Amino acid sequence: MDAVSLTAKIIWYVEAHLDQDLTLNRIARGVGAGPFHVARVFALTCAMPVMAYVRARRLSLAARLLRPETDILSVAVSAGYGSHEAFSRAFRAQFGISPKTFRQTQDLTTLRLMEPLTMTASHTLPVQAPRMEKAPAMTFGGLNASYRLANLAGIPGQWQKFRTWQGQIEAQTGEASYGISHNFAGEDRFDYMCAVEIGGGELPEGFTRLRIAAHTYAVFTHEGHVSGIGNTWHHIYDSWLPAAGLKPGNAASFERMDDRFDSRTGSGVIEIWVPVA
Image 1 (cartoon, rainbow, N blue to C red):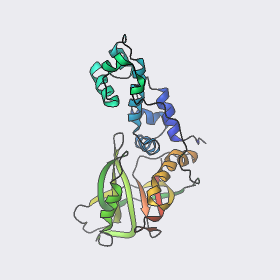
Image 2: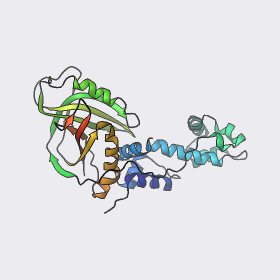
Image 3: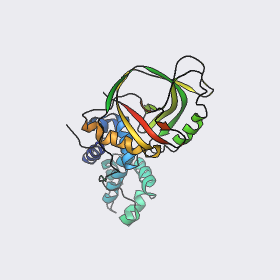
Image 4: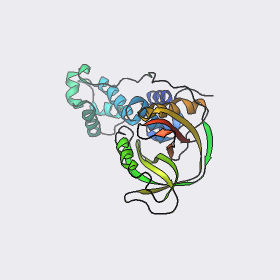
């Protein structure tokens, strides 16, 4: 059973393949996980998108190669850029100075270089053995918004707006609320919906319907205040799934809140449903 953390695998793969054509999909295949899950766990752990790390590492290595006698295009090609212009734009965006100007000074102390990341322990949690659930197809209604993994600051406000509709949604079935991550796009984009399960009936203005196909889920629990749920998500993807020999599936994941969670205080029990392949 492979219990090596997913983040450690990602860092190792990137560092071992910096001289190759790295894409999010290639990194995901290299570590045996889905692209969105690679992007999510890396952003949760390292507070930056994985491809931003790749770019920063390549440009930092390129900066060390720049000398007055060095041909900038050859350095650009070694960093994965096909032209002098593209490399210069990326270098300036990363360091605030052009490679031509920096080549004359060679003062690396003026640059914020990205060194290889090393893993530091996050706030550790007791290892959970998830329960497995075969969920049927479900239809949800709620407020939907798009986010980047690096900036989830709008989610609490989204929930605050959604809570004003609790108990007033005609189509609602059941009492639970759901935070659904879906519509994964690109390196770090996804949609998040604050929702309830629905049957027939009308939805309030501005609400969206979402149907999720039947799938098998590993169900974990987050206990305590909701502000710490990111740490629980981190442990699920980075440690618990690999230790259990499970791989995330390519489907929506969600947080489920029932009467064990107090929305007024933000504390209680939240179930985290992760699709598994």
